[in-house]
Image 1 (tube, rainbow, N blue to C red):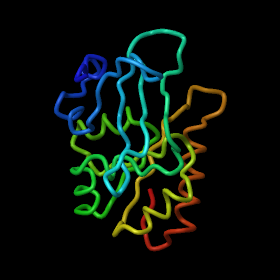
Image 2 (image 1 turned 90 degrees about the horizontal axis):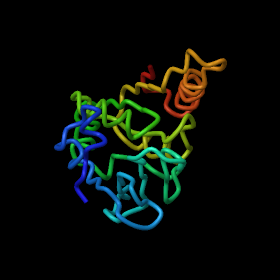
Image 3 (image 1 turned 180 degrees about the vertical axis):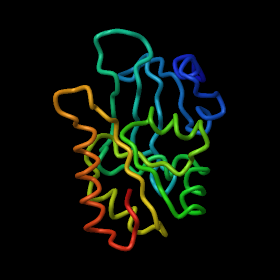
Length: 170
């Protein structure tokens, strides 16, 4: 269902949420989650990610399908694909929420790593694009005992650097 209150309250517009083809699940394992379909290059659905919209004991996010094989939202949101190709650059973030925030603020050339580890398949797909500049933006966990976001960003930069020597990685 097109019930977007959760993200509307966080400043994400209805037009952004429609671009991402998300909706509220009313049954099954994604019940009461805002669900984002993950498309493959052939236009078929590869999986789903669902964000809980009510407070309860469930995990915040549930993912169906292999997250390591996702290249999201490149095949799901046409304006993202166009922005990446036109700018020859990409911002890599951890989560759909981070992506929505950037997209809402005009940064549409965004891809999601679904965590702090960029998969080899993700890097392979990225290497096949005419990208000149990559921005790695993981959540800064500076108030924690261990800053996992910073560590993940550094590891990602080294992984990307070893595979994409002609790209500028920031």
